[in-house]
Amino acid sequence: MNILWDTDPTALERYRFALGSDTQALPSAALVARALHDNVGIQQVIIGPDVALDEACELAEAARLDRPEMGVILMRRRMDVTALSQALRSGVREVVTSEDHTALVDALRRSRDLTQRLIGHSMGTPAKEGKVVTIFSAKGGVGKTTLATNLATHLAKSGLKTLLIDLDLAFGDVAISLQLVPTQSIFDAVAMSGHLDEAGIAAISTTHEDSGLHVVCAPNDPGDADRIPPGVSVELIKLARQHYDYVVVDTPPSFTEHVLAACDLSDALVLVATLDIPAVKNLRVAIDTLDMLGSPRDARIIVLNRADAKVGLRAEDVESAIKEQISVSIPNSLTVPSSINRGVPIVLDDPRGSVSVAIRQLGDVHIRRRFGEELNGAPQRRGFFRGRS
Image (cartoon, rainbow, N blue to C red; front, side, top):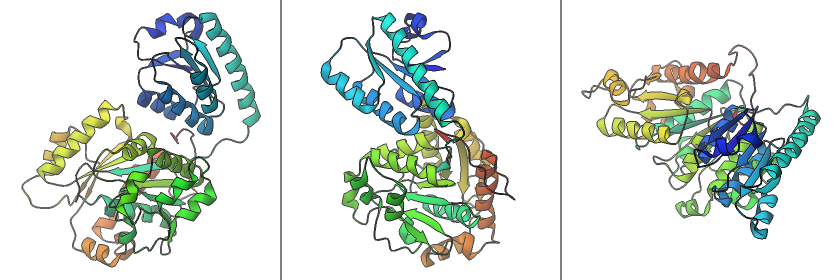
């Protein structure tokens, strides 16, 4: 199957002769990334002449790491030596002029041949990939970090190799919530950008001894946040999913470039709200934004925290406002702030409590079973650009 990435809605018909019938046209980078994430059968991506060169090269660089068997062919209105050199360095297989359909046919044929050889060479060694779960709320104070740390702790205690990444780069609280004193942070991944590996992740992560959870903490200095390019987060998450069963990502309460990248790479997106009008309004805005970005609805899990608070709103009111079903309701409990202040996850501190039961339900029913995992057996790891798994 081919993907044609072109902003012109008539492009597919114009190139139909060269591309054949098994081609889907998509107008944006987000939709192309999602298609590649969901469909491992895509073998060629043809990029139209009006797509910005930097965006095209970014896709090619990502594909070279994640999908080396997939071909990327770039069309330009005219050949430019500088653009040609940049494209080939990024991993584009062929560059052709958009008006030369014969050259496009030949380029596709050569790219298909190479793809088939690479697929044949890699048979028997399928990529193993874990799942990325991002926790997000567009409003602060809803318990997002508490949920992320406890969910990740539960997964780790269940025998799953789990990494928790704090993407609240300026004001992340994951380290203090787990009473960790990290000597390294995600900022240290900047120096390894482009050649980050498993040893690099180990070097920048801190282990939570009580659960075995690995944690990549936010920088201690909020000023370092602006010095971490989004590409570092992308590289870290993509590499981590190759070595962990689950990668849990905690986020700030805004759609930063890092958050958008994490959402785009996620297999499950946990959206958190509480029973107050600002939180519900921001949840609705977040859902609308994700819809606009092409984020799949079936990847979302709505969590209502402090769901039994007597504040004049009910869960039914929230569902009516957001037009989505709440998957998990976490009750209010005074044991939660106590556990936070002592730096002990509630799932370890009060494992039989109602809050812990709800978090385990989120982890076991709405995440692990979602991906076909047998809860009484060994974890099943599958997928590729996702599982992008």
